[in-house]
Image (cartoon, rainbow, N blue to C red; front, side, top):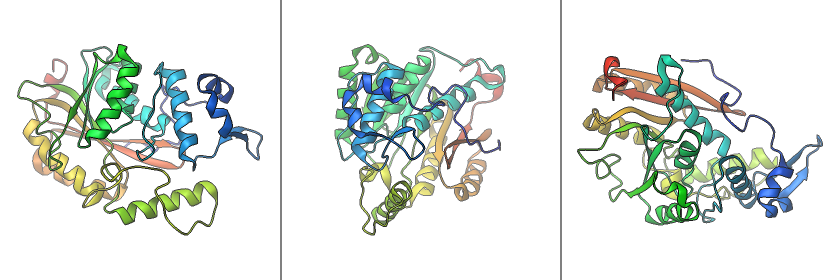
Length: 307
């Protein structure tokens, strides 16, 4: 396992402090939420969902030329720098020992649970020119993702969306027998219940505001499928691993974020049991939060370059 990092990936466009003047020029409404911190730096209050949404909109427009990005208030508002890191580490994974990052439409990625925000496919295509398919069990989320594509018609040929009609499955109903993907990716539901999700958001709010808020609320937004599922992260990723066997010849690298380090032992044991040929754990960090990408493949090394 690599040493845990405290900085963003070297190719991440967000390694430097935000230039708020530049960002406000992209999204003027953002200026109402920007203020000088005690250290004299410009910042926003990250516990205000509207402020975070406008910051995301500005980042996506300035760095990735994505116009009019928007999500409903009830949906999860993702941190763009951390989402970009996942894409860059996948690029390293695909490069392997050659260190030459593959670009262009020959790379096809599958984003499981793409959500209303569509962030992973947008970043993947704009960073590396990859073709992407985003899936979700929530049709309203996919409708909003389609709205984003409609606002950015240049992307619509290379970013597709597909509805998953059965929440018991991840790859079934999505992949046909002829489909092949270079990688799959997923940011799974973290919590095992709504109560757990509420408590988690209360902790996050307290940390950001340094406040004494006692009543938990989902002020970070996010619907059930985005935040929690029965059994939490461990159950969801375990289900993904078990199902991946059935599609072992159709996806070169299966990947998934794992937030809880204590889950890795059971997940690695399961991967060994099902016969994965290679398993990697890639650490990535943004600020104090450390997350991990769990990656596995059933394709022998000598066949990966021609996959």
